[in-house]
Length: 134
Ligand code: T46
Image (cartoon, rainbow, N blue to C red; front, side, top):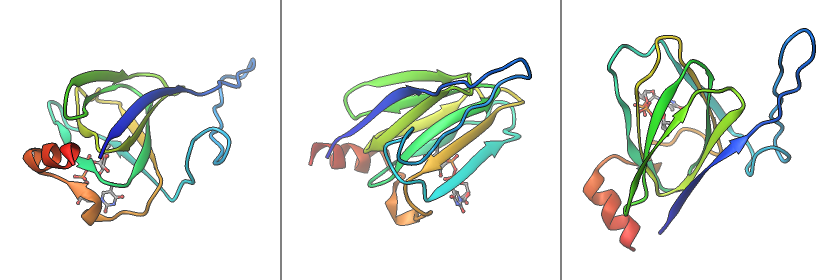
C-alpha cells in the first residue's frame, strides 16, 4: 500500500476590505468532505499525530498561526511548515504524520473524507512500516 501528499494553493479572493478563501467540494479538493475538525490552543512544546491512516484523505490548513508536519512514507521523512491560510496539505493513504512547533495562535483546520473512525488509525510505527511494504 502506498500513500502520498502534496501542497495545494487556494485562491485568495481579496478586495479592499480584506481576504476571503472559499473551498468548494468537487471543485477545490479531490474528495467529498464528510468531517471538519480544528486543533487550537495547543500547549507549548506539544507534539501530536504519531499515526497513519488506512483510508482517510485529508487537507490540513493553518488558517491562523503556524505548525510543522513531519511526513513519512516509510522510505523518507520530510517536514512541511503550514503557515498560510491559502496553503493546504493534502494527505492520502498510508503516510505517517507527526505535528509539532505549533505557534500559540495556531488554528489548524482539517477537512476529512470520512467520519471519525478509530479503526482507520495505525498508531504503531512498526505496524505502519509493515503495511507500507504490503
Ligand atoms: C490527523 C491529525 C492531523 C474525535 O472524537 N473526533 C475526531 O474527528 C478527531 C480528529 C478526534 N477525536 C478525538 C479522539 C481523541 O480522543 O479527539 C481526541 C484527539 O484526537 P487525536 O489524538 O487523534 O488528535 P491528533 O492531533 O493526534 O490527530 C488528529 C487526527 O486525529 C488525525 O486524523 O491526521 O490530527
